[in-house]
Length: 474
View 1 (cartoon, rainbow, N blue to C red):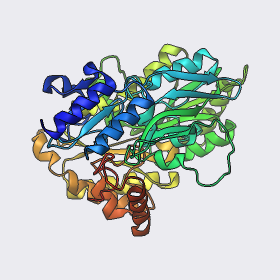
View 2: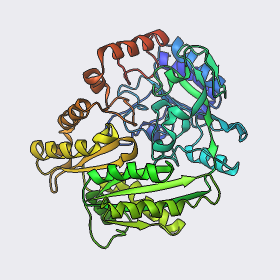
View 3: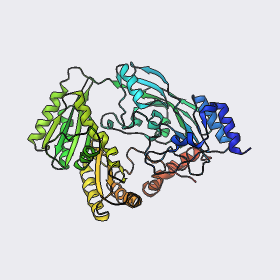
View 4: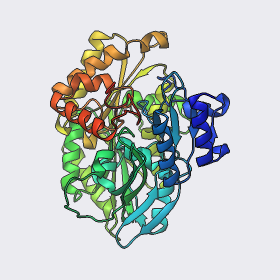
């Protein structure tokens, strides 16, 4: 009997025969990766149902010297939840850890298992007259453990911060199988190192997050949404400053949409329409929100837009008058990644710069692409309010998709060089995974990278916890 056979028998004892999957057809869904960039194989898929089972699985794998790939909803965009090609690793999928352990509307927190679907946490919070503001395109299938492991961002970072800013406590299975119970719900605990932050954004390379205490916020009572049209990009950042001043900083979202992106959505996505009679080069979706009853937030939006028109910052605006119209405007923004798929290959850059330099980034980046990659079509969009732009570049019309995607590394280099030269980041919210390990080596400050490697070696000396992701220690 092979080593893997002995290990798999032990894993079946821990999680049950039906939750240790080894046949190729049944494993397929766990091996597929969102963008199709990586080939993944595995010795097996293990689906524990409790923290104790996760710990036992880790202990068994460590004893067999078999590496582990933690996996949540498998919606990541950088290959962080994919196994290697040779089928020697075990994927630990946390989907069965899906209980809401407790909710405390008085202290405004919720304790959840790592496998809880993000949309379910949002719904439970709402049922208790509270708000969990993390919101992503994949919220119907992504899991909170994965959100924490990648420090997910989303559309509400401007108001509430990244996932890192919403966590109060964690429960983690360490690389040796021990359980660290850090499920505190305190807002203030100044007793040394903030260990929980070591695991947020670590993508499962330092341990497996099995539960978390997350912050809640007062339920929103009113929102007001508008899509603004611009003749030039620089006016968009000026509008952001104006909106923050005139609306008591009640902006929840401030999302950039280029004309090319809007046209792709109208062309390819059913139910998406252009709300403007005339095309404009740029659009921004602005949403204000408040938990204060009778706040007259719509009046604040109206006054802000009147001032913006008066100052010639915007050339037109569409205000949502109903929930259906709000959803219609948001459908444009949320459909952008899907619409790009129908245009062929898309080389993606999840980058950030200071908000004041977003216009410079987009203008310089567009010029560089035009010079070095003729015909390629930049479609920069995203979270203008926090400086995170998805500088995606669609293939030239009529070219071969596979040939175009061969330019991924070259295009990464010119865009990431630009971003880093501007004091920005080559990975704003999607993480590192397998996709950007080389970019870490290339761009990360050597001292900072050395410290990260030291932490990895200290916590995971055998390099069995999601090896080859974030920092590769061999």
